[in-house]
Image 1 (cartoon, rainbow, N blue to C red):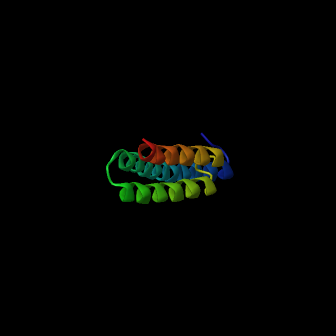
Image 2: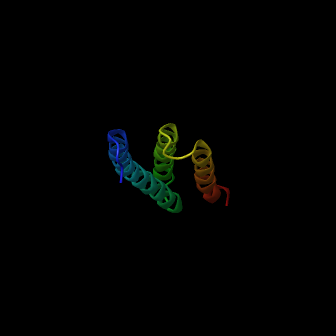
Image 3: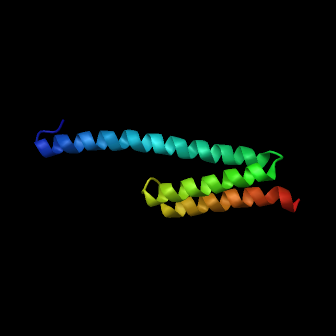
Length: 89
């Protein structure tokens, strides 16, 4: 347990940030899951809209240091490849 006042405050701040980051990360995962589901569906317009939302969410998460920028880039690349795959076959 913290002893100094600054350590107590730091612990409180960490708890608030942890809860906020859990919420943001959960929302990001939900958006990605919906994008993958839309890519597997039959509607290319819905898949494109879901992809655009996923890209925006990934960029925001990377800008806020929720995820690393290279993780965001890799995920966007994989989603893009997933969207292009059915059109090529």
